[in-house]
Image 1 (spheres, helix red, strand yellow):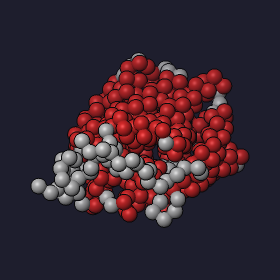
Image 2 (spheres, one colour):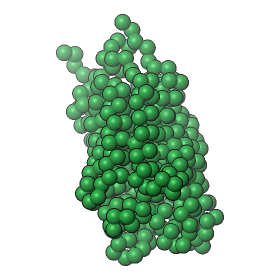
Image 3 (cartoon, helix red, strand yellow):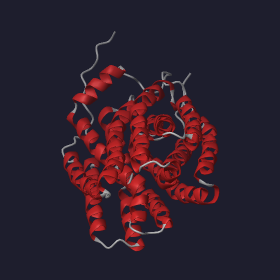
Image 4 (spheres, one colour):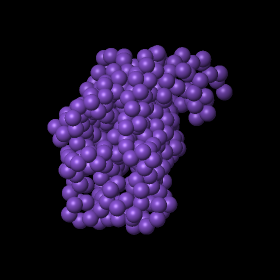
Amino acid sequence: MQHKPLSLFQVLACGAAIVTLSMGIRHGFGLWLQPVTQTQGWGRQEFAMAMAIQNLSWGFMGIFAGMVADRFGAFRVIIAGALLYALGLVGMSQATTPWLFALFTGVIIGTAQAGTTYAVIYGVIGRNVPAERRSWAMGIAAAAGSFGQFLMVPVEGLLISNTGWQNALLILAAATALIIPLAWGLREPALSAPGQVKRDQTIGQALAEAFKYPSFQLLMAGYFVCGFQVVFIGVHMPSYLKDHGLPPQVASYALALIGLFNVFGTYIAGSLGQKMAKKNILATIYFSRSVAIVLFLLAPLTPNSVYLFSAVMGLLWLSTVPPTNAAVAQIFGVAHLSMLGGFIFFSHQIGSFMGVWLGGYLYDKTGSYDIVWYLAVALGVFAALVNLPVRESAIVRKPLQAA
């Protein structure tokens, strides 16, 4: 029996809605830093460590979520991720010790995000969207995650203000149940059926090929920097602004602006990826981030300067995601796209771990975020340089001998 791919509208509508919820909730976690640490009597390092573990768990488990989704389809992976998300948010609200908080906030929510965000959703897009529209479609999905940030962060700020930080987490746990019906829209026909993706390589062969290919390593290096920058800013900027005397709503509006402008940034990056070399798009994004951070640190810190910085960073925030994943698909094909995307993303999350943890650690040690800001600038220049040598053409494989 011949199976048809899912329709473009179905893939984009359901995939975008899932990413909106999953990423939207996740982007607001920085709003909980001060309420949680003040209530529990912890330093910022304890909260930052839990968030660092979350990012590392998300990246590490994303590899295996990608393997399962490539082999059996994304549906089961997304359902499991939604259930874990709800469990993690409930546990986060009730944890009374740093290690329990790290377990629920870090390990469980991180694992949940692996099953409900880009690596899995992009695998579905890669298998069901023609190559000539793939980068654009990935831009749509990434823009949805950005819209989720714009939509959810102010909502989360209001929930914390009006219901308390613990009740706010319980409400969000209930909201994750909406991911389950959306997952039905991404039920793919059996991936081994005629007309579906042909697998000429085993998982081991695909991994060996990718990790020996210099361009894959360079993309991983750039994505490490992406994680370092965005997660440090997303988690620590609310406290940075409050430390400098700005009211809490400035941080909520700033994070929302990042989300709003990233809707445009990711869509533009995905669209340009159909016309321009993806490595040049990535190099421009990373270098522009460094310039934006330098200007932000040099300018007087006012609500207006914060909003301008947030708008610029929003254009550059997750705009790395479509060209990076589209480049992986272009080089290696789509048969193992979720898994290879998972490895690339794991590098991103190691960077995220370092950015969020160093932010908390160095703040507790020095009383300032300055060192981490400077690191973010230097790493942005590094990422711009390492993306320039990437070769985007499809890899040439020797024909496998027939069994």
